[in-house]
Every structure is written in C-alpha cells, then in structure tokens.
Amino acid sequence: MTRGSYHPGFEDKRVVNWEPGNALVDQNTTLHCLRIDHEGDGYSRWADKFADFLRMAGSSEISELVVGGSRDAAGDRYYDRVVKALVAACNQLPQLTSLLW
Image 1 (cartoon, rainbow, N blue to C red):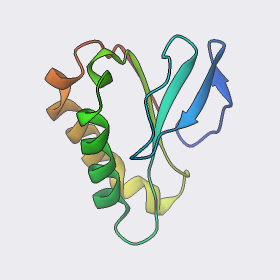
Image 2: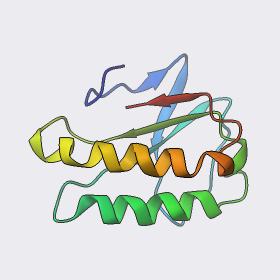
Image 3: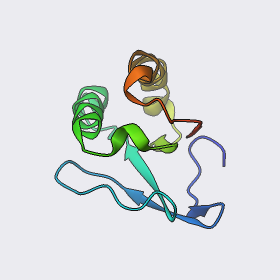
Image 4: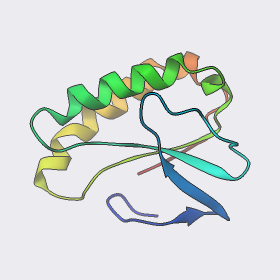
C-alpha cells in the first residue's frame, strides 16, 4: 500500500477508520486507521485523535496501524509532524511493528 492510496484491507484484514469514542476491535482481523483531516488545521485534530487512541485500553497491544489521508499538497505538510508524534509515542506502542500510510 502506498501513501495516499486506499485499500479495503491488508493481509486479509479490513481497514477501519477509528474515531474517538469507538472501541478498538480485534486486531487479528482489523487494521485501525487514524485518518488525517485536511480541512483547516488537520494536524491538530489528528494529534488529538492520536492522543485519544493512546488512552484506549488495548492500544498498547496494537501491532499494525494505518495513518493517512488524501495524497495531495495539503496532506504533505502534515506527514513530518505525524511521524514525529508516532516516534514520541513509541513507548506507548511497544507492540507496533507495521505502520502503513
């Protein structure tokens, strides 16, 4: 899967857009996706969503995560900050082995 492409699943797993308030679902069958909203300051909204995700029971057990949005000039401005946020949270995601855009 390349950055910016849409794929309904990966390795026989379905991709589910995760939003605050939603429970985490079985990671054996599901990849959680934290979408970047490119309206206004999309990074701030993504950072808030990511913080909520990290507070979810079970988030430390996630081994695969999809992060993304549309592939356009507006989206490119967020990826460096998203990567920095993911790296800063590495201790909270000890099982993470795959990051997909």
